[in-house]
Image (cartoon, rainbow, N blue to C red; front, side, top):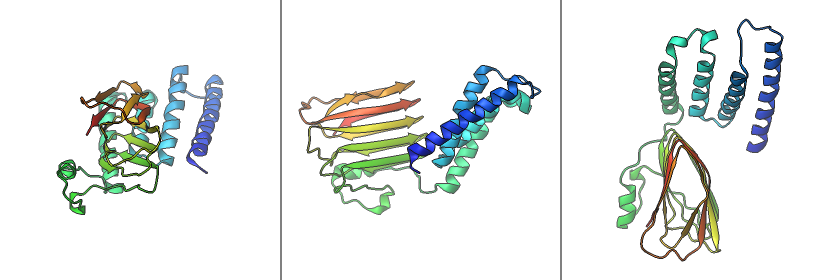
Length: 244
């Protein structure tokens, strides 16, 4: 079952469960009242929770549980812990689980300087190089950590970036677009994304920002090369594009 079908099943099951919950509330089988707003928010958070569990997204799973607990703080008897204690506990749990299950995430320092200086790349710098010279598409996944990626393609067409509570630096200066256009699709949540692109690329921003900042730092050189479309969405984060 592919990712789209999994999420379709998850959404369907959650809505069926919500229908049952609505029936239970309407029949008065619960000893506390649940508003329509609470039911709607429960549906949304349950979808996020189950989707995060399927995708092994630690931050999404823990924080959706945290928000669900705050939503039902009164029945659970934890109103004194809402909101900051719950959020603090969720943050510590997320960090702890990420350290245990994702030890390969780490901070990256100095690689950009090394690349600019022309030195050979070595494993001692700690980050990972993606050499996609035989592929026109690539995917970058980052969750609860900083990552640096270098896209080296002779026929670049599409890059997909999934970033959740993380920082991403993606270098496209070695990517060659043989056609007239390419796409960089972004799905970002509480993240900081920096894209480094060739100076002749024409960047067209079609990203949907939600409480986020999108910046394109253009240099004086004319951007008369292929068109690169930025698509997708960024929530509670920022995306910056630099010409190099």
